[in-house]
Length: 348
Image (cartoon, rainbow, N blue to C red; front, side, top):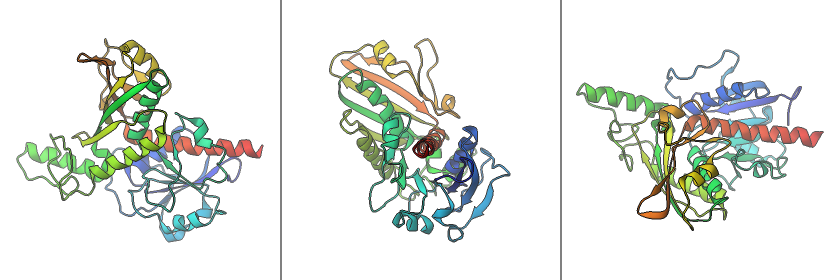
């Protein structure tokens, strides 16, 4: 799979997006062994925002027709859901291409690719099939958060039911959504008309249960994606949560409110002990509650002090926040790292 001295040829489809830029930053921060990094033009250009800068040593964006899957060891797909670029569609039918596609958006295909969250279950990240796996879906950050919390709890306490509400930020919809939210906020404060091309309605200062008719995305589709992924990843290990996603006037980082009913009453201390560790950081009641601002720039899942429901002795409330863009990028790179390490081990 690799070229040169343990180095990899990497391409990022949709590298101009927020997620694509974060992937580049994470690859560098984790010292992923890259011998060549190429940006592949996505379906549409994203407006440039002064958030993440490109580095000078990255090759200029190439058109779809200028590359082939055989040119790369890993292709990260960070563009919006839709059809695959033609060179990747060809790779689906060519098992000898040697390219592994890591899809961060989950798009339609002939068969559902395996879903991966390496830090939760390293065995399923490999599953002894790395030589055969050509396409992998990197789980959505909301899927990762819900799966992590529920699996940690289910490992210690039998769960009867769960209800989750995810508060989605503008960054989930890309740079254009951040730009529109900023313009809406400024224009409303100066009593001017607001743009509605992305959200389809006023998002600034509002929480929306669904987007307006003119919006470019659908919360129902997003909700269906997360529900499908959570069901696939949890399997029979935990009851599936009832799920609702709402759009919030927050630029970056998502939050989640999770209500869990256990078979027997548990204390907040017991729940906190079950959750804490690894990528999950649980705050004490004496500390300030974690916010989306606190989560920015980190792949850790920040959990507030757990509280019980006064009216239901078996119910507990869990609040969590995470940088959705950072976590998505880190999860995708960890998939590549696990496959790369497994390839080396198999060759040794």
